Image (cartoon, rainbow, N blue to C red; front, top):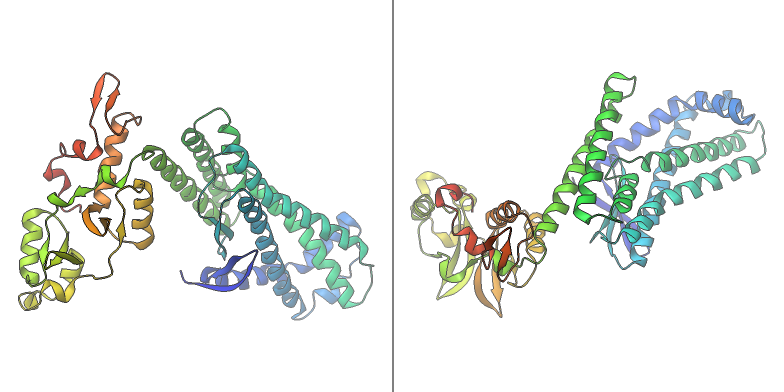
Length: 414
């Protein structure tokens, strides 16, 4: 979904996802429809003495609903800023804070693997919410009770923010990874376990929590919104576990270990017809080739590029007509995980590996996935540069091991 920037704080861009623009009116309507019930609850529990009728008559409840919804999401931004400021103090930059369908997300450019750092970052957000709840509650009692609509509205809003911020802190501290409570759990588990194993355990707890939350939303008188949150938690826990496992597996693995070296990469000329290109792709079982002109790489051409040309016109069009000239490159000594991240961020299938402005090789998503499979099957603790594991010799590089993977298993994968 598209995002729009609405400002910044501490140098961190604050953005609105378009899903937020869908949920904000819904929250405003729900809050407005329940103003009368909320006021009665405050009067009953806290003896607030807020007049019900002025706040629940006509369109005024929905004015309060809009104000409360905007204020609530402002509190969510402050919650995320709590995480962000502590993260930056530990040296972890924040790309952005985004408000979206399920609240807010502070996007760290890199996750801490030191358990103490993650613990402090994780609890900072709920701590801010608890602080906001306390400030709102104090303001609630400082505002005098009166029949005036303005005074009654302010007292209601302060009471509402006190309740919602407390609820936000409690909900986020439930052990539903990747929520704050799940990250706290991972940090505590990582005190005496490898980070990847702690992530796996926390993710399993998070998925169990998501299943219970989803069942409650489905059968326990909950709401479809709870089911959606449960789905988000389950997917988030699975993704975090997968990404952390991959990061651990690729530790110490460089692009050079995984790439196809330049002398083994087949290239195509700019004047080759698209029809000839597709025949080559079928014959070689590859779906992407570097394009060369005068012995220099000038582009990349993929199956998707060729498919964009109608079949009857493929003899007339050449590779130069359809190739991509916006080349994405990476150095051979960069981490394999960094390469995978770059592929995902740019939604592409291959990177040109360049060393001192010279073409050194080609790295594809399939190369990385094949390497990951080999590393997992070897028991993870492979050694780049030679060694042994479990009584078996380990190849000097992952690329040498990949030579044992048949072309039949890899066809149309690159």
